[in-house]
Amino acid sequence: MTATDSSPRTGSQPTTAAPELDKPEIDPRGMRVVWLLLIAAFVAILNETTMSIAIPHLNVDLGVPPELGQWLTSAFMLTMAVVIPTTGFLLQRLTTRQAFILAMSLFTAGTLLCLVAPGFEVLLGGRIVQAAGTAIVMPLLMTTVMTVVPAHARGRIMGRVGIVISLAPAIGPTLAGVLLDIANWRWIFGVVLPIAIVALAVGAKLMTNLGETRRAPLDILSVVLSALAFGGLVFGLSQAGGSHGADATAAMPAGMAIGIIVGSVVVLGLFIWRQLSLQKVDDALLDLRVFTSRNFTFAIVVMGILSLAMFGTFTALPLYMQDVAQLTATESGLVVLPGAVMMGLLGPVIGRIYDARGARILLIPGTALVAAVMIFYATALTESTSVWALVIAQIAMSIGMAMSFTPLFSASLGSLQPRLYSHGSAVLNTLQQVAGAAGVAVLITTMASVSASQEAAGVAELAAGAVGARAAFLFSAIVAVIAVVAAFFVRKPEDQPEGFHGGH
Image (tube, rainbow, N blue to C red):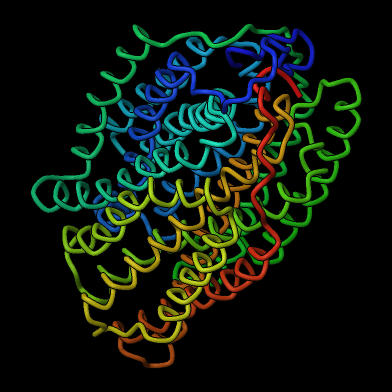
């Protein structure tokens, strides 16, 4: 759905101009839409990252165990994983403006529901509605950037995207920590709500339609199979870990959880088979021809691994800091603030390096930094670990993430034909959210189960919590090392020939 994407059937870009000797400029009208979408993404990510600090307080205030409270994060990511595969359909049926208004209306309504929620169930419902809106914003943003920005400048613009997606996580936990210390959890949504309303109003007034729509079919069976497959996988993983956790009586038996995981894998196979059949006539909900690009495949594998480690860490680390290191919510937020600010400041620099030098010079050391921090957490965390050690570790991890995400976004989608941008964005964002939800589930349940077993063996509560945290981060360390190996296979796609905006 772009200024040049007007093909009634495939959405490929028709030729509009003869090839030029000079590199094409960025369309100012398209960039205005990109900035409006960045504002929407900032609000959505700000909201998502407040939960990592707030969950321990919500567990106490609402009287729910950690294994249940973490679903305020997992359900958010799970909903995105279910909704994102349908965005390929939505972005073809709806105009840019319609898609934006739908996304921000859902997000605003969900935020209001969370604000007035009388208990955990309604709060969880509000988070799910918020996630449905967020799920539309992110693919719309990525698809728009890929279409309106020429290949030679994508790293630079992706670097600006990096500023937004790093500053929001920096502000989110810190803002949540301050609000929790001086007020209560409702104020988190009370602060986000007016920002969401303003973003919706400004976007509704200024948003420009970049392309024409087509009557893309919606295959209901594919939607059902997608929801059952991705939803079942994350739910099964969570329950399998929870059955050995501190509150094992609240979880289903491990055998039943494993059965759900196996069943979900089978349904995923059916979903893939259905898409392979439908894509022959360009009617797939999720066009899997994106995987014919080797570079795209390696890039999203690394992205999935980093997402698993990152989202799991961003949820488990605040629990460690508050429950084991005995830091306040505000102190926990301040620990991650310097690193996130550093990530934002590096965004433009990383983008320019990618444009000039390619992916590997950034991605290999970036993933290595992330792996090193995970190994530090897995081996060195105790109940008395220095706060400054945590701050330095988070700065190093944030630098590694900054060096990784801009090349991965640019190299993965840049490896595809323009008509597959929306499907590639949907695949990338789906994998990111499913991997993130799995990371949260695995790390939290590992932390809970190991801590409980240590306490049962007579270890003091804080020391047992530190052992549980190290066990959880050991999992992140192992998968992060795999990402380092895979990073060697990701390269910057060759710049499209001059005039690529006109066709492929």
